[in-house]
Image (cartoon, rainbow, N blue to C red; front, top):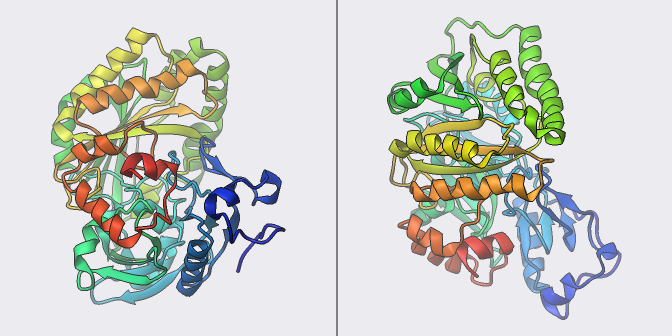
Amino acid sequence: MTAPTPPSAPPTAGGLAAAEGRPKALRAPEWRNWSRAESARPIRIETPSTPDAVQRAVQAAARQALTIKAIGAGHSFTGIAVAEGVQLLLDRLSGVVAVDEASGRVTLAAGTRLWQLPKLLAPYGLALQNMGDIDRQTIAGATSTGTHGTGGSFGGLATQITGLTLVTGAGELLRISETENAELLPAARIGLGALGIVVDVTIQCVPAFSLQAVERPEPLPEVLDGYLERSAAADHFEFYWFPHTQLALTKTNTRLPADAPKQPLNPVGRWIDDELMANGLYRGLCALATLTPAMVPSVNRLAGRLTGDRSFTDASHRVFVTNRTVRFRELEYALPRAAVPEALRELDRLIERRGWRVSFPVEVRSAASDDTWLSTAYGRATGYIAVHRYYRETRPDQLEYFTEVEKIMVAAGGRPHWGKLHTRDAEFFAGAYPRFGEFLAVRDRLDPGRLFRNPYLDRVLGE
């Protein structure tokens, strides 16, 4: 199914250049990502509901010399999902494809949203091993960009992949798993959308489990001094630091059996903490701070006093995930874990030295080393530092924050998250990832005509 189709016939002569020269009025509606930082007006939009339909879309795009991209949920802050030619919406390619109950492996259609998984996996008594704190993404989009949660002994979402199926640049359906085309699996787990259109993903799930959560404010110096030990000892440890304060909100989650006694948050209390305070009131404070930057330190001190200091036990997904409705823009770097405390201290000094007013907290997490070629945690125990700005903070002096933070992260040996803001290019990544050249060779094999390219991939992978 195709919707909506431009009123004029698709280009058959002149190739991509001719198609992209069309008046905007004849193109599909404008697409914008969640953070409102990226937009595109593709030639057309298609909504395939089967792998065969994806194949036909790719083959048609190739005949017409159009690029083609699947866009997921648009939660990446970079332009990784920008589709200038054909935009594929995979919402109709959703749900459970197959379940191997003996092994706990579940194959999911690419457009399945993470928030749907608890209900889909419940009949089999299964859960994802680890999750991030946002679940709006599609399974294919989240894994392709290296989405991760926290936990010093746990990898990102892509490390849970045991197989996937994609449509190559030749329009062929290719199965990649531990037994089929196994040599491609370390590249395809985090493929950035550059290797093909993923149509399904097989995930190694675990028996459903509960989490005991302890959230409390602590002095930042003590948290930094104990970060390495706590990241290694706790199942899942993270903290948020409020700039202009010496306060960190720590979150420690301990894994328990699914049948462990639960003590969930009171629904009213949860609504007050997570919706009224964390979203409603905080949105208003961010908007006010945008107009009056001098208020930011006071706002951060208030936020630190009004959040955290609670404990509860619930099903894993209810603890991992929080609802985020305040729009922001984010830069996140993966550092050698031992480099995190000093990098954050340097960030604190930078903010004060430059006199910036930063309303959003800085998030610090961790992940285990893994062997996926373009994983930010490839080959090393990793810590993550993520910085944010309210999406309406768009003045050059406000955005300079990202530029200067990035310098600290690069100097500390950091690798940027593929779906979050950064300025790195292919030359940088060739030095940052030992298997980068091999990934490019796989790309040449699966998409020699660069059907799946876009400006962002041209920058980070080369043309």
